[in-house]
Image (cartoon, rainbow, N blue to C red; front, side, top):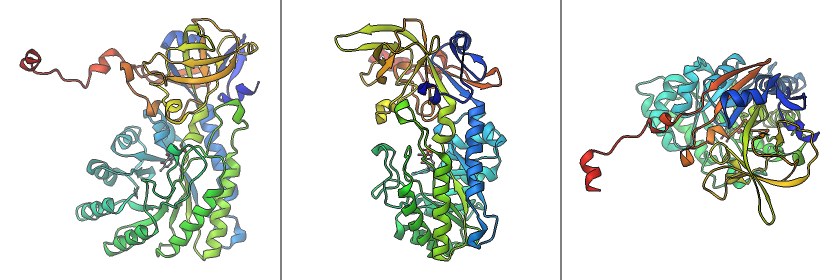
Length: 446
Ligand SMILES: Cc1ncc(COP(=O)(O)O)c(C=O)c1O
């Protein structure tokens, strides 16, 4: 069954029910409630191995005649999903961790991620972000000239981490407009002239400029625009007078299949080969030393390891539709509303039942856009059944909200037949924790 390929590697059907990592999903839902998010550790580990193997195989071939073996590495983009356990997993996997600002830096530190693995990104870093980055990171990726001015001031009292400059290559990859980041007029990064100015400021102030970064967008499957962006970046690097040990970070963004129509899964090895070849041939052409190549994937490391489990509360048949009303949706997964993202699903019990009708799956929230699945062929199911939505590991919980005072779901880490809770479900008390009462006299006046 194609749809099963969207699920984590350890997914099996036993006693006519889905299991992941040897865990009985109905038992987990009974113990922890729904909506419930599951992360399969084996799938997470396998995704890192896939990237690492491809990087080792593709980058640094002696035929190019530079200093070998060339270095390469993986940074996990924490914005895809970050919590203490995921940061601990990054530490254990020796991944660098891309933190967007103070909040993610705090999580990295709490998990014991070492300073030399922390990379700080951000398009308008606050003074608190810059302060935390200066104290705790190995690298700050400078987004704009105002930020660089602030770093020049900070350098008078702190020793700065290494700096990379974020280049805006001015090219779009094929993806939703809201996940484009490297095109001309994007809010991210600096154009060529600004990068040259930034490099001049770094030199003039003896700031440790060590690399260049760009990121063109997220959820693309055609790497060819990356080739042009790499060429432009290498051409820029030639003008910057970087040391031999410079770093090139071409971001992340490699896509995943969310729906069986999009299978097979985009090939990570082919993506890495494309990038590695573009860097090697580009450096040879420009006479540049090979940089350390640091990839920065988020989604393609964690999306397929995650599954969202919902309880079906009601089946509603309107003139033209069958609605399956779930107990989660927009608040834990805003991607369909934001990007028109398409998903698939299976019932946990009897997942191999034949499809009998087209269904629309919606959540309980007070928005017509709270629809996570549109027009999916599905078996006849009844209220009370569990529905599993695959490829739910990236940009769901990290973009989740308390809309309608929804409580964020619990998250479980599934590993070898065991389930460990890594985030508990929010409680009603959590919802009130930040709130302060109005003074009594103000309430009376109102
Ligand atoms: C700077 C940067 N690096 C890496 C990523 C990760 O992208 P993805 O999760 O699509 O791999 C993003 C996502 O927007 C990003 O902005």
